[in-house]
View: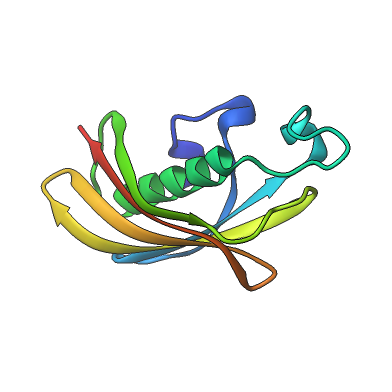
Amino acid sequence: MIDRLPHRGRWALLDRVVQAGPTEVVTEATFTPDAVQGHFPGDPVVPGALLLEAVAQTLLVLSEGLGIAGRPRLAGFDRVRFLAPVVPPATVRVELVLRGRSGAALQGDARVLLDDVVVATARVTGTVG
């Protein structure tokens, strides 16, 4: 499923799909020190924007599972909370639950976890078409 996403190179953040159903998807993303080079030198931390990108890519996995095809567009994030830093090397788990759907527009609630501890939460909205 991940190989069907449009992201390539360093922007293909997801390592694998752990679980995929019609209303919930769980993915994993690994961040290495090289991926965050220059972001707080000497005290590296994964940028929140990269965690949100992993959430957005997880929403795309959900759209694939629902059979929605086309060009993806991120519409926005709401209720974003960063609760703890993610220090590389680290593998995070993204859990996304479908909140609503209107045609090709999807909205989901996401939790990003590191070692079973929630490090970020967000509501994500995107469209495909």
